[in-house]
Image 1 (cartoon, rainbow, N blue to C red):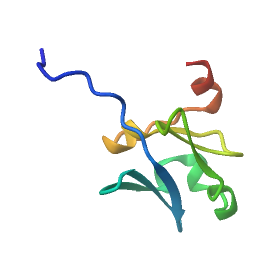
Image 2 (image 1 turned 90 degrees about the vertical axis):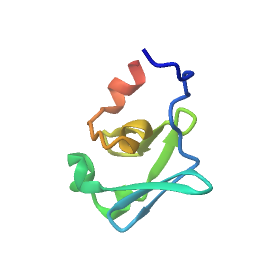
Image 3 (image 1 turned 180 degrees about the horizontal axis):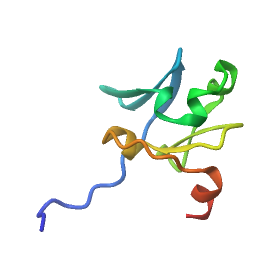
Length: 92
């Protein structure tokens, strides 16, 4: 059992694309990034589709306007790359 207090889920302040890589600014001094190839929906998306990136759920999720992909910031920060559909995320 841990004595550490519960910490809130990790959230991003900003998100952006640079080429085929996603960058998430966690705070003023920390950024994380990952290649789009980690997710099938992103790997095969056009650059125009990828540029429609946005944050949701108070910065805890990254979504793309026309792609069926929702990514949890906490998962990416911990090198867990799971597919979550928008429909599944909306019902959670």
